[in-house]
Image (cartoon, rainbow, N blue to C red; front, side, top):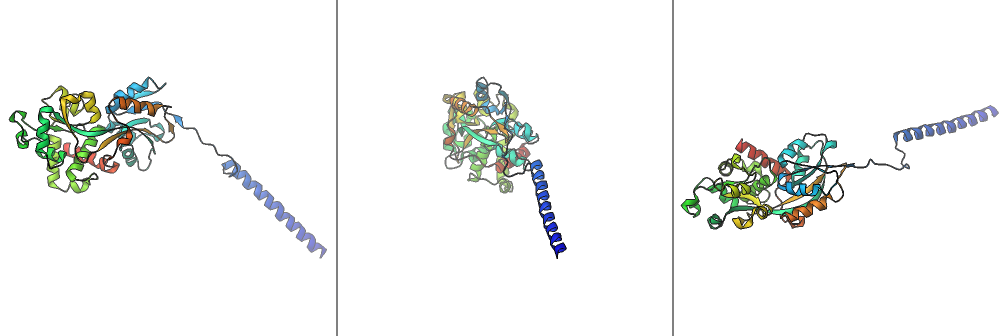
Length: 332
């Protein structure tokens, strides 16, 4: 009996010692792996981003704030060029991006397996518009009464202004949306034009491409004015300097204010859409203090309105990507 009791005591002691040793080993593993729930967690501070890429439509705005932000480097390039470049870079190297909606979401669509997960800071907004020389403005208004403006423009593109009730001296209806593949406002204007044709702010590009009438409308709208004639970069700026090259320009209120509103008749196609400018900050990065406020202030000084004025945005990211491809196929 005594021997059995001694054996039992020794066995119990061995179990206790083993448990203590096992717990110590586990604690050591947790400490090495950093998984001790009681230990405070630390996160790497966000990298200070000083490289800012800006769309061409806001070039003057971005350059005007560069002197206010120490160390900030500003590069200007078309939104489509930046979109394609950022779709292929290492996310850790992504710069700050001043662009328009929905380009950041379009980027994450292209990077679906490795999104940048940007934070968006709204900066400013401006309505999309259609501008014509003042002598044609009334003709366009009355000739397209009762139909969506861009649907009417595309239907008459390449034909005589007399079909719209205009003077024979006006010659050919020559509209331009701009460089749709490259520029933010041009693609946004194309989105608004397709929305007007479809009669809905959420058009379905796949369904429209099955419609021969739509494809004919698109060919007329995209093919009447050669993009190579846009010597001043945008349709409105080109029309202001070379009136003979086109006479209907996709634009914005902000650009009209800059180029000179008294020189053109301005209309707002239905559905009325606004372009919103934003600062996109990639995950893990931090924008310089005061950058967003400075950009917003400079944009408003350049004719843009506060971002809260957006009541109807342009179509969503997937639709805009599909429209960009559609335009490329139509003009390629």
